[in-house]
Length: 105
Image (cartoon, rainbow, N blue to C red; front, side, top):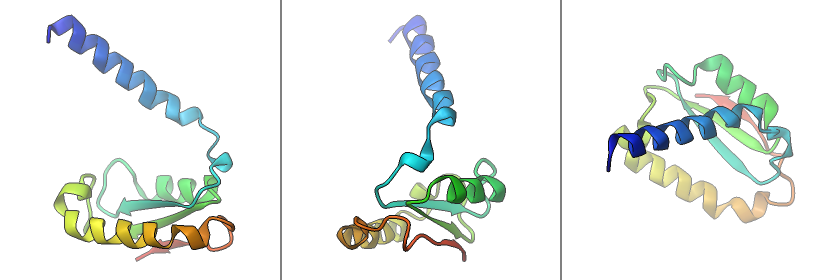
């Protein structure tokens, strides 16, 4: 892949990422789990709290000792948690905001 292609791709990906800041998260009405590592320098506490406020259908959970790439560092634990969340998704589908909770484990 040539440098111009790589630069174009990186620019496109960055613009898509930047556009996520304008999404109307309140319209997300499907059960959603947001996991936040308490040592993540990018998704700091106030950003996690803002997601919890902005996304009524979301469960925001803070994980002690998890950093930014915990999908790698804690892959087994994350896989188990995602599996449990997905297994219970049918029961949450009708009431996305009713069981929402922000946890700061």
